[in-house]
Amino acid sequence: MANTMTTSVSVEEVYGILTRSTEPADAAAQTPLREANGRLLCEDVLSPFDVPRFNNSAMDGYAFRGSELKGERVTLALCGTSYAGTPFEGEVPVGACIRIMTGAAVPEGLDTVIPFEDVEATDAAVSFSADAVKPGANVRLLGEEIRRGQVVIPKGAMLTPEALGLAASFGRAALPCASLRVGVFSTGDELREPGEPLGPGQIYASNGYLLEALITRWGHEVVPLGVLPDDETVLEKAIRAAMAECDVLVTTGGVGEGDHDLISRVLGRLGSIEHFHVRMRPGKPLAFGYLDAGHPVFFMGLPGNPVAAAMSSRLFLRPTLARLSGLTDKVERPETVRVVCGKDVRAQASRTDFVRGNFVNGKFEGSPLQSSAMLTSLMKADAVLIVPEGTGTLPAGSEADAFLL
Ligand code: AMP
Ligand code: MG
Image (cartoon, rainbow, N blue to C red; front, side, top):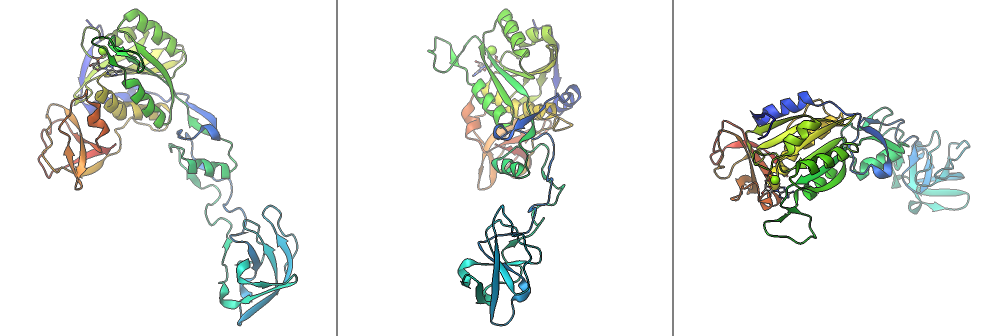
């Protein structure tokens, strides 16, 4: 006897409701570069200077004027050295050159570098064939890669090792990253943690592991909160304690209409939670809203069936976290690609079907096993085909949207 209303909604309606009912959290924190791998960037990173910052040599060799490349052989007087970090300070007269190391500044007026191995050198002069090198060769020019003020890593980007290297090359020691702390609970009397023995009727709690790995991969910080029984008092106490240390709370299980589906009842006392039947498969039950812990804590109650939990988190939780992080204005479905069906894809017009399957000779084929309890159907799949509500079975040869796994 749930005291919360359950509303039947389409998948598209869920996105609308999520967009209207969420607000960006105060979620950006300066994250030291060494902790920012895989995190989401909350502001554009602009280059504070031209890159390279000065003309410099791409080789160890001799720097000179390209205009000296005349006749058959060029002979130049040697008048100094430019090291990386210790530039040559003087003037280089016409007819002269300097020794130069990779990364060292090329003095004003010089524009060409010839590698050591292409010259004959004494202490006082070098000579080389005029066609050994072209004017302008082996010099990296000021600003040729990046202009000052250019956006190099855009807001919303997931920070890759390359992005972190770039940020460091601009002198950034920290970056503003999304820093939502997302607590994850699994609920159900039947659940045991891996490593514990199983009693009759018990199963291992797998959803927490899957969800925590997804949420980490999406750039957020996970607070693993373990397994809770189907007991109102225990649930309420644990959720109250978790609210204090999280920005977002996610639970799996207990959001259907079964006798033990307590999540909505308990959460209803801790904040303002709506409970939906989404016309989709897998993943029909869904609850979300804000809990009041002094600060707003966004709550999402996902279904217990593992495929449903995984699908609903990809479809709804991920874009909601992006919105809460201030990275998007809307909660939107994941990016899709157009695919052609290689075989009939069975679906019902009364709901949106998310069909797991594989590409065979470039065409999508649904897997035979589509139960929302069967995690293998998701693990082995290449993609999820979306058959929108009102469509029904798609005949072989038809086109549809899919998101890649
Ligand atoms: P519920 O939504 O609580 O009715 O659960 C639906 C189904 O998912 C039941 O078969 C549960 O045993 C199963 N289930 C719930 N939570 C988990 C979990 N954390 N890991 C694996 N299976 C689960
Ligand atoms: Mg349950």
